[in-house]
Length: 370
Image 1 (cartoon, one colour):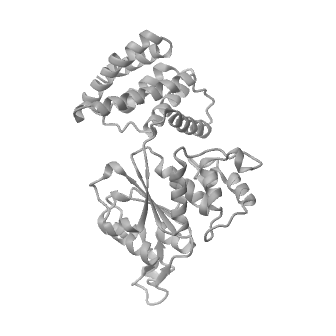
Image 2 (cartoon, one colour):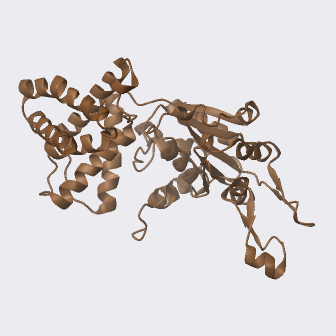
């Protein structure tokens, strides 16, 4: 694990998953490692009423009903489509579910304009084909085909970014649960084993890029993940991800609660301003997602660690916020400058403390970029 830049969930939480499996006495669908109740517990964390001998930490922060519907969908062997705005934790939830259900979250296809049907079915090892001809040995199965053969979960990220022919290829896989290999005369069908399913994610802002056909929609159960609007829940997400970052980089640095509150309040203010804007020029290009909020804090922490005195300060946080959110010039810079003068400056005069440093750091960052 120390040699991985980022370990998958089944590696990060291997000991916890093994312990949950050892105490799990509930019935399990197919070849699942954990029962549906334990999968939910792994994702959302334990409560006193669960009666466990140890605490299981919460890993995904959202409504319990979304997780339960996702688990029920996978237990029915239907495809699961997690759809929502950027930064709502769709991919993280998909990874946690796959890790808990089958112990492997890495069978992933990334949807892009360049994704082809081969990426979800199979391709060929050209040198082996030239030497020995086409055979099962010279075939390179896709992550989805590997998931079918092993009876586990395959993942498809950003489904709506892939073209219609790729999406159409999924229809037969989800419906028939097999892939035909017409190039072979024998052993030319790969059947899905019990336990196989697909968790796909889609960005709701990509609507119109490559819309799903009605036939493919029928093969998926949809779970819509809303934007986190509860400040307490968002704080827990940011804190959880920040602690993970600090462990990964082996950084010992405290994030003062007051600075976390300033970050949360700043994003809330900017979202409110975007909601009331009458034109795109009055909105930041950033989606102002929770993921971007984590990115701002990560940037500030690393800057403090490597170029500061290893103390996170309001000035550094403001500089990271401006640097991360100012993507268009001069539009985004003007919006952030208006926010600093219209919202942060009065708050700094009234409350003082870290808001004054945040105001100074933001002004300096804008002056540098202007």
